[in-house]
Amino acid sequence: MNTITILDNRILNDRAVNARDLHYSLGSKQEFGNWIRNKVVENESFIYGEDYVLLDNSIRQTKGRGGHNKVDYALSLDTAKNVALMEHTDAGNDIRRYFIRCEKELVAKLPHLPSTFSEALMLAANQAKELEQKTKLLEERKPKVDFFDAVTNSKTAVSMNDAAKVLDIGIGRNGLFEFLRANNVLMNSNRPYQKYVDCGYFRVIEQRYMRAGEECINFKTLVYQRGLSFIKKLINKSRDCIAVE
Image (cartoon, rainbow, N blue to C red; front, side, top):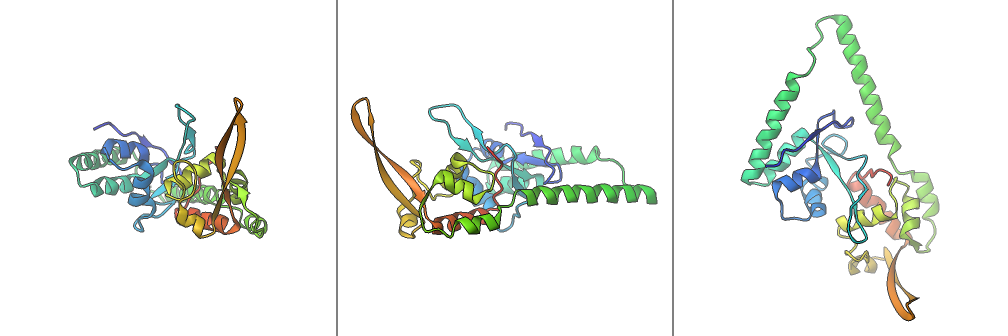
């Protein structure tokens, strides 16, 4: 088992695990996007902001042909233990025991409980400050609903770049493509599955261009107003709060 680093995360009470690292260490055969959605994001047992959250650096460019943006989640230590158990494998049990051991070591390092009234007041003040900071972080990452509603009154299909601007959740065009691929709305080619076209969410147009004297064709995905509303609901469902690229 690869040692999984315990992260510091202000929203998840400081103790967290990178979900992608956990996925790798568990040896899951599922693609990460499907795995995290099935195990955590769409699991009603877990609450965004308490059990898991998107990492601030969740959109990162990887090396290779063209590169791809990656979405990374942080899981609370308890959530990571539960997810490890859900795998029903020896690796999952080993990782769960590793997390329990790490948690005991972290608890041993915690400061002592307040023994005087003044110490208790100081502890309460610090906890109130942490809660205020956590709430502020979550509020700052919420979509600007008024702006969204004003722009999406149009029935015109817009590009994915404009859709990302309209949604205004701190995610660019490439990050939005990644999110929709991870949620099985778009194919690897960034074209929508037919059922989402039939629903009136997307439109695919053909573009012709010349390269080296030859006519080439590519396809561009556009988003209708209904599609913007659909994407917004999908983001809210998964408590998405993706950081700026």
